[in-house]
Amino acid sequence: MSSNPKWTIQVIPHGTGSVLDLGGGTGKLRRSLEERGYHYVNMDITRFENGEPSLIGDAHWLPFKDGILDMVVSKDSLVNFREPWAAVKEVRRVLKEGGQFIVWTPFMHPCAGDVFYHYAPRGLQYLLRDFEILTFESPLWVFTVVGLVAIEICKRIHLGFLEWPARQVCGWLDRLIMQRRKGSASFGAAYRVVMRKPNGVKNDDGNSVIKSGYSLKAGQLSVGQVR
Image (tube, rainbow, N blue to C red; front, top):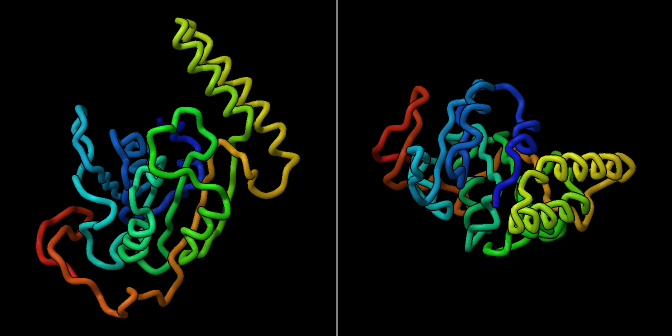
């Protein structure tokens, strides 16, 4: 299960610095983020046929030193972490003060049955409580959910050519309804959260973590002892 990358990309401004695509799979965000001026690092737990990711690693134990990343993006990956609270804590650790954490996560998604968690707005806000939430949106509403079910049925009965018009119609209906709503729908197809690490945040013990891993220097990954 993977959503259209545009929903994540459209909230990422042009900038500089290093961005981690956490659980980025085949690197669908690479081109867009590099075009926006970022040094892109894709991390996942397995290697794909196209050579992605650039780094094999575990979201529960990120191989970066403290406060080194300008941005972390989690597109469709938060639902796959068996201990998401640990992964979120690691994201906070490796981000610079003021660094952004952008999450796109499915909720009422018919093709997301093999994940660990589904996040309702209240639970997602609690999980991300140590960040300053800038925006919390549900740009895809119930018509997208219905459309995804219809598309899956069409594919199974060899009517896959209906996928594009179904997506267009359902997207139009969602936009029409969402323009008249305020706040995040509790039954949205997915949620998009933009947040940042507050200034003055330290690790729980008040100290830096010392471990072997990867550090970012001059826009490149280098292996070694990092603080």
